[in-house]
Amino acid sequence: MSSQDYDKDLNKDANRLADKVENKANEFAGEAQKQFGSFVDSPKHQIEGAARKFSGQASEALSGVADKVKENPLSGLIAAGAIGVVLGLLLGRK
Image (tube, rainbow, N blue to C red):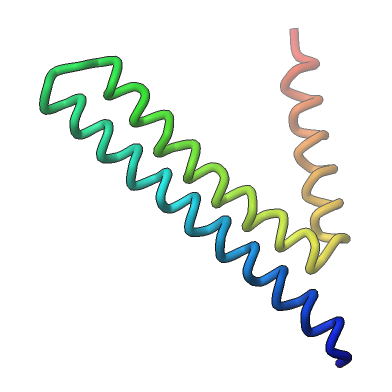
């Protein structure tokens, strides 16, 4: 492995770690905001906190799926096709 490849892998790993930290921070901040909203009886803060928390969770799940698809593109393609078929069947019903 050349030093350039090592640097690319190291940068990629650092970016993934930074994304994970950001997602977890959003998740915890969202939960805190939601709890604050419950404490002060503010539905606005509860909803915003829940949205922020779930946004962080969704981003984490999406990055995990993206990593798996990059590792094995064929299985990603098959899964996408299966989802397309199921959605087509569900949306095609009248």
